Image 1 (cartoon, one colour):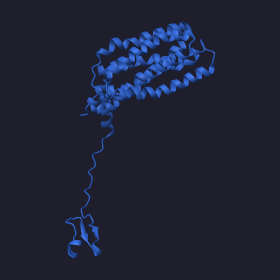
Image 2 (spheres, helix red, strand yellow):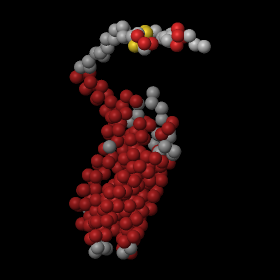
Image 3 (cartoon, helix red, strand yellow):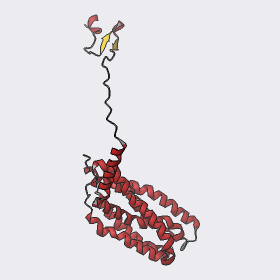
Image 4 (cartoon, helix red, strand yellow):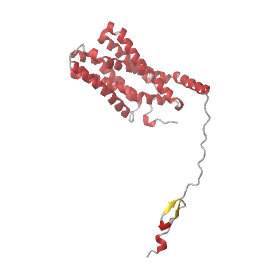
Length: 251
C-alpha cells in the first residue's frame, strides 16, 4: 500500500517547490534578461550609396533585361484586349448586357489566373510555364478577331476569359523569376524593377489606342500586337533562370 509520505511526494523539478496540501507553486525566474544590443544605425549617405549600387547591379543585369522586355511584349496584347473589350465588342455585338457580363468574366479571370499559374509554379519551372503562356496567348490573339467577326457570343466570352487568365499569370510568376536571377541582397530591387514591364505595357497600350487604332483599326492592330507577343518565343531561350520554385534556395 502507498504510504502517506509517497502520496504527497514532490516531483524532482527545480522549477517548483511544495507548499501546503501537497500543492506546488512555480519558482520565480531569477534570471535577469540580457540587454539587447542594437545594431549601429546606418547613415543616410551610406544607405543611399548602397541603394545606388543595388540599382546599378539590377539594371545592368542582362537576365533581368530579358525578363523585363519579354514581360512587356507578352503583356501588351492582353492589356489591350482587356481595356478595349467593350468598344471592340460593340463593333460586332449589340447586346450591352452581354458585354457587361464579359467584363465580369475578365475580372474573375484575373483572380483565377493568379491562383492557377502560381499553383502550377509549385510543380513546373518558370520557363516551362512561360512557354505555355506565350504560345497559348499567340493562339488566342490570332483567332480572337475571326471569333468576333463570327458573331458567336459564347466563343467571344471564352476567348477573352482565356486571354485574361493567361495574362494574370504574369503577376504570380514573374516575381519568382526575378528571385531566381537576383542576389538575395537585391531581391526587393529586382522585383520592383521587374514591375516596369507591366507599367510600360499599360502605357504603350494607351498610346496605341490614341494614335494607331484610328489608322489601323482593330483587326490589323491586333495582328501587330500578336507579332509583338511572339518576340519572347525567340528571345526567352536566352533567359537562364530556369530552376523550379521549390528548388530555389535563399542563401
